[in-house]
Length: 219
Image (tube, rainbow, N blue to C red; front, top):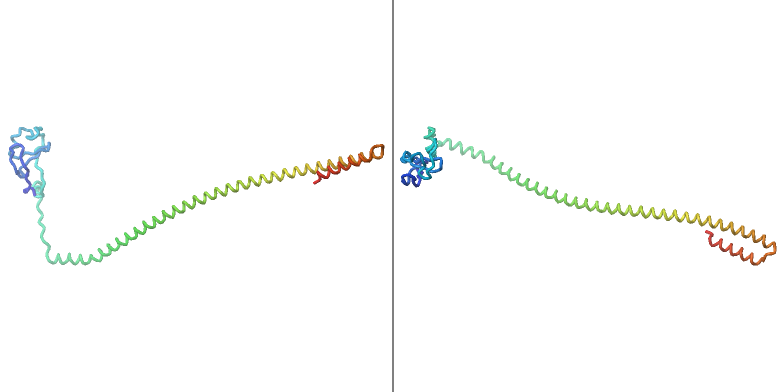
């Protein structure tokens, strides 16, 4: 209530313990009592700031002050009768099961929230493990691709070597055929010379050497 509120001192008359109902407040933040306001010469007695229009004014801090200023009638609250108290008690008793049900629902909801948090943590852990497995599988797939690439390269090298060997074998067969033809031609010439005046023993040695050479290249 405002009747119990007092200020320490008026800056103009220096009077102490002045009730707030007798104090006026200025726009600069200072105050002055009602008795001294007419002696201030339109200036604040504390800071000498000029008092502007609309000030000074009172401050209403209590309910009675506000009601009195605004002319709001005071509402008197009558005490509840015994039947009203009994009815309120009955309603409270009727509401207890609902309150208990609400508390049970809140507890169950809290348990569900905790279970949801645990499930979220489990899902996050499973996701991390799945990501790790996926990365491991991707690494193995890359290794398999490298092995397949190396295998195809080696297979191609083997095929190239086999083709080169086949070409060499064909060349050897061709050279062997040519050598045999030369041997036969040489043998024919030797027989012709042997029928003449030539040395038969030297011709036989030449033929034997050609035959031996042709056998070395025979596949």
